[in-house]
Amino acid sequence: MSTDPEQTQESPSATVEAKSEIQEYLEVSHQRHKLFPRAALVGFCAGGVAVVFRALLAAGDALRNGLIAWSDTLPFFGWLFPILFSAVGALLASAIVFYYAPETGGSGIPHLKAVLHRLRDLSWIRVLGVKMISGVLAIGSGLALGREGPTVQMGGAIADGIARAMKVSPADRLTLTAAGAGAGLLLSESLHAGSTAAANKSYAAGYEKGRSDSAKQQYHTLIEQQRQPAGGTNEPTTLFDIPLPEREVGGAILKPSARTLRIQE
Image (cartoon, rainbow, N blue to C red):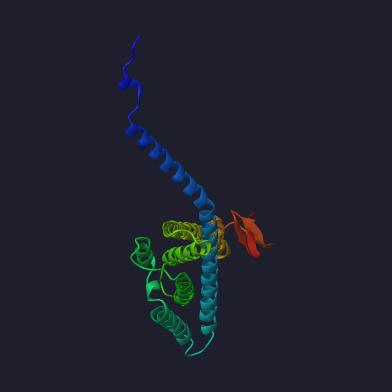
C-alpha cells in the first residue's frame, strides 16, 4: 500500500513555526514563574504600606476629635481651634506636594497610569514619602478626600522600588508596579469595607443602648399607665408602692424605679 509523501512529511516552515511557538511558551512560562514570588513580595509590602497609612489616618481622626471635644469646653473662642487645625493641615499638605512632588497631587492614579504607559518617570522614594505625609495631613485635618487613590499610588511606588532593588528588566518592573497598585487598591477596599461594617455595628449598638436607657423605659412607663383604670370609680382603692430594682425587659435595661399596685375592694 503506497502513501503520499506530501501527507506524511511535514513542511520545513511548519516545523519551524511549531518550534517557535513552543519556545515562546516556555519563555513566557519561565518568566511567570520568576515573577510570581516577586509579585507576592510586592503585594505584601504594598499591603503593609496601606495598613500604616490607615493607622496614621485613624490617629489623625482621633487627634482631631479630641481637639473638637476640648474646644467645646472653652467659653468663647473654642470654635476657632478646629478651624485653625484644619487650615494648617491643608496648607502644609498643599505646600509639601507643590514644592517636593507635584505628581502626587490629587489621587495620583493618572500619574501612575502615565508611568505604566511609559509617558512619565516614577521617583518612588519621593512619591511614597510625599504621598504618605501629605495624605495624612490633608485627610487627618478633616478634608473630605478619598483614601483609595493615595493607597494605589503608594502601592505602585513601593513596587517600583522593590523592582529596582531586584534589578529586573523595565518590562518586568512595570508589571510589578501594576501589581503593587492593584494590591494597594484591594487592601484599601477591604479595610474600608471592614471599617464601615464595624462603624455600622457600633452605631446600631449605640442606638439600641440609647433606646434602652431612655425611649424604651418611657415606653414601658406609658404602658403601665395605660393599664390603670380610667378615673371615676366609687369603689374603694388601696395603693401600694413597690420598689423595682434594675432589670432587663425586652432587651432594654431599665433603671431602678417604683410601681404602684392598685387593689380595688
